[in-house]
Image (cartoon, rainbow, N blue to C red; front, side):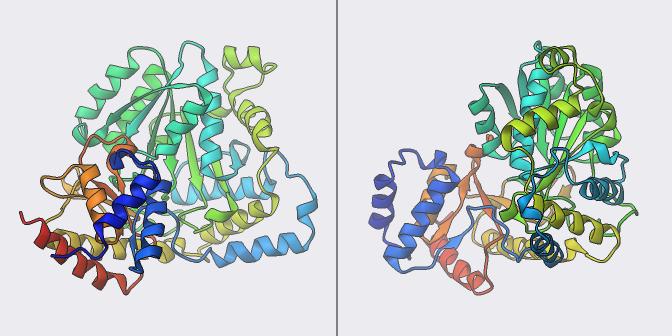
Length: 436
């Protein structure tokens, strides 16, 4: 059957952009091909490649930020340590929804988790000159590896697909016993697979972090978005799962971008355990006038990067944290739509011969959420991503995220209600053209 978009048009655009291997095409490159093909063909794309919030920014944050700007806050540099009230509310938020105690001093605002990870990588990689390598529990956010490339910091990586449960300990120890790992990085829920590490897996990670004295960078970009559990009631379990219950060597990166749909203002917090914040590493002390880890992070790394975090955005995040802790703002209710979209999209793909690549958290089906992963029998990641472009569907290959599995990452954020029927019709044609 004829494809919705002419193959020659798509192939020509890919060649025009100089993409030699579509399996390795970046998010921005896939987005550009989709936009150009949509414009030239007149066929609307079902765009699933870009992880941008598809919901309005939290009104409570917008109003607080506008008020701060109207009161003249824009003329003042922010405190490098952060707005005191934001630090207080961040501490409350962690207690309310993670269930752990971190003092206000140890909660530091950043220009989004992207800046938070950059500054964290800098600090962790300089803390002990014997430990010069970061370990990723993949798949993960590709840009974090680019950050290390920019810094010239080494990294190792493994795909967690085959190392869930008890297998995780041996795999981690195979790296840690070498003595060169300064930090371990993962996201939970995971971008792109949406798998969620279990409490027993987090306990294993925490125990090994203590045993081998490395720092855990827990990326909570999709905070409390495992919709299989009700994590919406402040100061009551169940809480967001975290390694912080099992070690003192941790940094929690909490972003305003997805949970609060506040991506455009580049705001988040890095919450460092109090023990790590005040810890003195000889190599850091020698390089930074005797400062402890937390003050190196804020007064050296963040100061050098941006002289602080957007002043008015701090007021926005402060109010969002406060309202969530006080039960006035149920942020999870607003983002649940991502899970509903994932459920409907999965049904369409599965009906037409696709499979979910990362399909289980141990013995449970993976949650429906912001992302999920698909594969098609007999097709590599690159072949599938390229072929779907002919059907007006864009997604990125898992290989770009550090995965060793053949498949694609699907993002639910931009799916409009009328596009379910579009996708159904196009996948019927796809299946007819690729019978199993």
